[in-house]
Length: 116
Image (cartoon, rainbow, N blue to C red; front, side, top):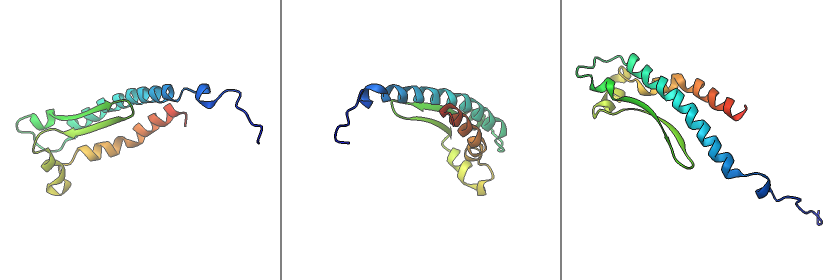
């Protein structure tokens, strides 16, 4: 092994930054697809009566992407949304159950994208 020499250094053979950027872009597209479905499902399936329309209207799912991170965010944006999600013995929770229901489909899409 003392005489080993790279014909082409790994840094020249594979552009890691380009691969990561492409992976992030494709992940964002996949998550955008699911964010729309998750948001629609949350709004449709929320079991509470929305007296003002504000709580249901502000259920959102969206994607945040920067240089190295892509994430799907689902949340209730009204100040009393935390109470709907966490109080009442879980009777009115909608965000986490919806995410849990979609998790296998989202992960399957990401796995396909990765070639798994």
